[in-house]
Length: 447
Image (cartoon, rainbow, N blue to C red; front, side, top):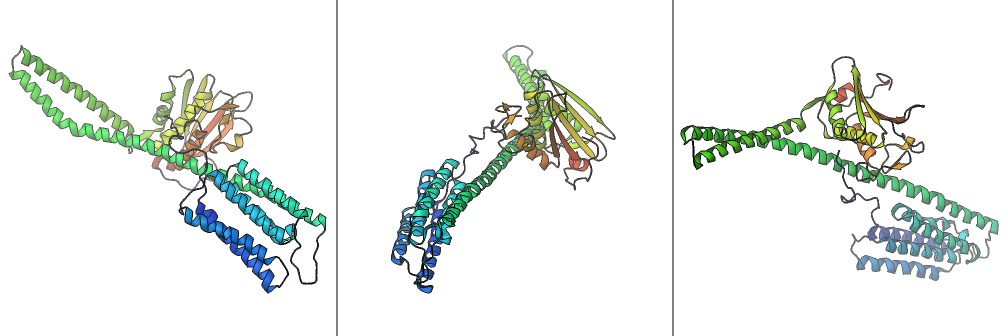
């Protein structure tokens, strides 16, 4: 099955950059909260505090937001460096407010984690780590250096060092846990989105090839009638024309070229019949079609078929052909000498098992098979795998086969035998009609 270079198609593993508008809006929200908190403490609670200094810190951020709003369009996307700088500024701005309002004794000290969380969902781990270290450094300074926490006039609220150390530990653990968790969830979502887009690209290509074959068959059919007329005219010219001389040679050449054109059109018609989107395939023909391209290699491919009742028949489905073909190609890549394909069926289910005698799946990835960007098997890189060697081949195959109503089971052969086994199972109705009924409670036969 043909490979696709997804890097050239735009499906790189990097994430999209932050929009400036997103950070500006979030900062306006933060500034509104900061301003409201300062006003409530200074005016409503009437606690003594450095009110003017706090407003000055907030005003600087408001001015920066206005400059960014008018200097750049709303759709402007920040480079990683610019986004990191703006998030670092937010950490320092909040640290300055905390310095003026009690340091880590301030209950809003936990908000220092917010810029790091934003970085974890949109920037690289290295930049997120740098912002996390900056936040920890600011928190460490605020443990020891800060103005008193605003409190009722005539009263001084002082927390012991052990309490402030506890707040510092909470911020540190929150940054570590929530940062790693947010980055991991975002990375998995990004990978899944890119991999699904790659799957759509593969399926679109296969469907396009089928449509081209259908157009070729239609063109061959339309050209058949005028070509037959030309052949008839050439035959009549040969009958009534001279038997020798240049004209006779030209008439003979015309007949030969007409015969050649008819042969070419016959091939096009055959191609259309092979790849027509509405044509049906017997299970044996389906297996042979995905195994045939791999037979020229130095790996023997054995096909076994057994079942009860009539042989299943399915519609020709580009996604189904690509998915099974990818599994067979992967088995041939890792097999030492032999690949065995077993097709089974009964009245309820259809199954195809692909087994090789290679090293099998590595134990550390056996439970993650089918995830995008999983590129190792038996310690070897799948650089020859479909989808440009990015670890998407098995994911694409699994996705396309599941769309046809199949379920996949992947495991290693039991010792002393070696190799990987992939079993694709369809409910018979789903295989024959393209319908996906409710999955059966029990498998129709042991896999």
